[in-house]
Length: 132
Image (cartoon, rainbow, N blue to C red; front, side, top):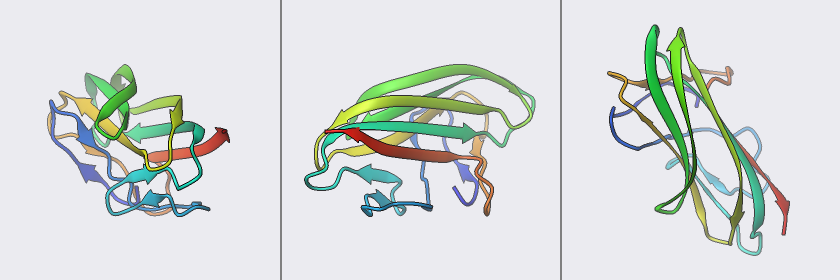
């Protein structure tokens, strides 16, 4: 993210990644934050996301999910605290052409905000194809 993102507490919220650094297949849509597997490019993909909260002194649970379309595929859950807590999640997903991958976050934290800004890589999503 190149800027902060506020989202709702106590619900699964889409993370809206709004910029790309590398995207050789133009598969990532910065207007909706979704990665779409290009035609003829199905296979196994490795994804990692790092979400940094812009809330200090928290001590709460944060869950991160990878969804493919409307189906939850995997998640990580962590208790976070301190200044600018960061939660990571990685997985390998078997995908077909046209599948959309979405990152979602859930927390009960009051007024949650994802950190972002300029060239700093605070809240990120990356992926690459491993095999057919």
